[in-house]
Image 1 (cartoon, rainbow, N blue to C red):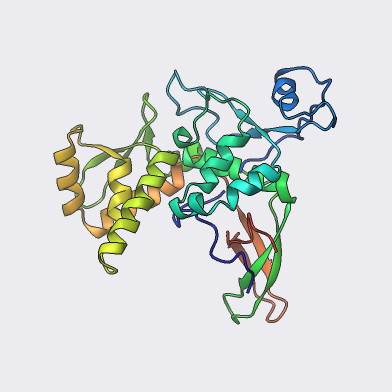
Image 2 (spheres, rainbow, N blue to C red):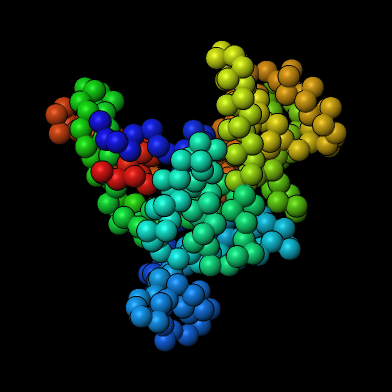
Length: 302
């Protein structure tokens, strides 16, 4: 067992998934353009190396951010390559305990310091996470997987160099889901016939769900509550009524079938990256698409 096992400190509901990114933009101490000042700040007069930067494609294309957000209508975000300083952050015991190590690392490598990690849409954050890992440890990600058919456990290497973004617009059209002018989407439910307005989750929402679930778990191991906590985070209106009391009453009485439709709709139409890759078992020749398992090896490779 690796000494790095169980050190992620990441919320379990974090789904890390990046859009295809252009070639890295590397700056030197004599570089020009928006990246040069960021890189120069990491330079030492006695050592001419400057931290390279990369523009990462955002799955959302900046479409769902408010007009005053730095990423409003921006298709990319610029990050610095990971350094030993970021590795220190990722191994900080206090940050790991609070589940904040990953966010703190991302905040440290964002070139535009106006961007707050907690305000990022989850899909865009996932894209930055994967890009950061690639800059730090390369595009090959080796981890242990089990064959779904014969259960053989072995090490398998995935390529995370160019994960595509999902086509959320097409998925929404096929599902009959409408986007609104304020960056939310409307879902019609089959049983209650309600029209539910949902927002896109941010890093702050994700962390709040994680902490709420952890708190319930400490009080009562069988308490659960993660599913309803997620519904509370992204449902912002029911049949045009946005009052908290109405939304809570609706969630408590929501039929399981409608709840499943809501969860599936959210996963389908939210901008994100796709880390599904082909897996072929060398033992039984089983072949299928597999979502890249994000274990402790992701940021703590052996």
